[in-house]
Amino acid sequence: MKDEGRRGDGEMGRRGDGETRGRGDSETGRRGDGETQPGEADDPSHSHFNSAAASTVSASPPPRISPSPSLRHHPSKRLGQNFLNDSRTIDRIIQALRPRSDETIIEIGPGRGALTAQLVEHAGALVAIEFDRNLIPGLLERFGSSRNFKLVQSDALITDFCSEIKPASHARLVANLPYNISTAILQRLIEQRSCLTEMVLMLQREVVERITAPAGSTDRGYLSVVVEAHCETEKLFDVAPGAFRPIPKVWSSVIRLKVRPSPAVTVKDYALLWQVVSAGFAQRRKTILNNLRSAPPGLQELVKLHGGASIVLCQAEVDLRRRAETLTLEEWARITQAIE
Ligand code: SAM
Image (cartoon, rainbow, N blue to C red; front, side, top):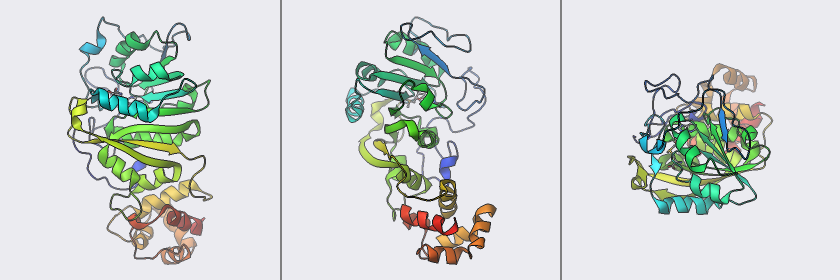
């Protein structure tokens, strides 16, 4: 696992861009050891329910169950498998979440069950989404008899969370995310925000710094603006590499994201807002004026239609010489409103 480092901008729509903890290469295709890769379009989700809750749903032969599957499982770098191995950190995450008996909790990547054990104990219902089929037998062995436990073998990048939590209409979510695809998963979660109220996420510390970076910070990027629009953020605490096995090379942080009932700014066309933000951050050293002038063709046309980049920025009351990282969410919205 390597430090994710600073990413380019407009990154959120791209899966795994610049994220280097664990898997850093293609996310499709199969590994030599038979491990399916996240994002395979033809990989159906398999839900494993305990027999008391529902019949087992499986679109392919069930995973082979061995006496101690979790002991035989080797952590996969490609799946970002750095398992929590520190009870104090596990307790802090659970205390931050405080799962209640009247709610549904989603856990992405239960792994060997470090967080799952307490979640099953306290939550009304737990929907655990694990991609690695080699971990399924161990999870079923430990938690399969709990009436409130549902295990879905699926790629969180394509999972329909709102369907999986039914009959509940809303859930909170917790995850020690595979860092190499954490921003892509975050984007997926934001897309699915209609059924998510809050998320407690362990991420690489640099990613948390980017997410929470205010206007004016050099860490601010596309991700910061998108998350700010949809969530209230609160960094909770840092976690040292020694809390995981295998030990990663980077520090982690836990962050709380409270999903806003509606976006923090109002524009007619949110897709256009994200295009503007993405274009604005395209080259960090350039001014917002120059980045807008060299925006992708569709956006450039729209800007020209409204008098050109300088006029648009003047209308939005944004100084032409500023750089994207200095702009507030409200200013991004004003630029968008000027070309809508
Ligand atoms: N929650 C466990 C813990 O804290 O010890 C495991 C965390 S480990 C950093 C990330 C987990 O996410 C692994 O179990 C991994 O197999 C799983 N995972 C990786 N990619 C995934 C994906 N696309 N969808 C769902 N789970 C995934």
